[in-house]
Image (cartoon, rainbow, N blue to C red; front, top):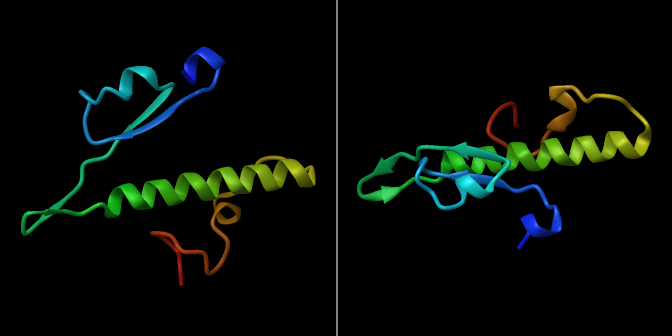
Length: 86
């Protein structure tokens, strides 16, 4: 549906055989750890947060007329995340 409307899809999958991967313009393949029989989704959550902060920073920069954003701008101080958060 989304492709028919010209929407670019981004997939976050756990393997290359995911049915989402062929439909996506970009596919991130993230392997999760298994701890005592439970799947840890830490890697997927970190990637998701990084993508959201990156898009938010790009939208903010576009609104303010600024050019490219730096990595520091993509994750403001104190923002929840995987690296550099307080």
